[in-house]
Image 1 (cartoon, rainbow, N blue to C red):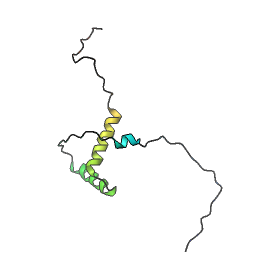
Image 2: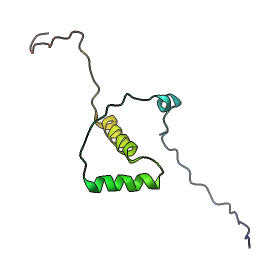
Image 3: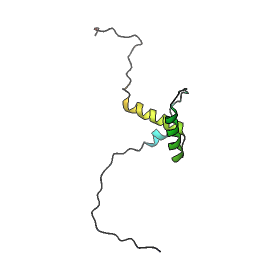
Image 4: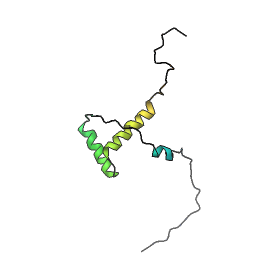
Length: 92
């Protein structure tokens, strides 16, 4: 048995949220991967495997994304010097 939806004239509470979706260029870009061996705790692996199966993805991908997000948040911008030799302190 279907019941009809009753609509009301209540005010809509809307708020603007920051755009969080990556641009198409960011989605297409694939960073170079480096294979590493790391020992993680059993509880961490069990957690990521469980969450990955819920979201139909790979647990390694989730761990990689977590680390990349951490780096994006806390990494200081890299600066390059004009020459390969270190500068001495106190010298302008």
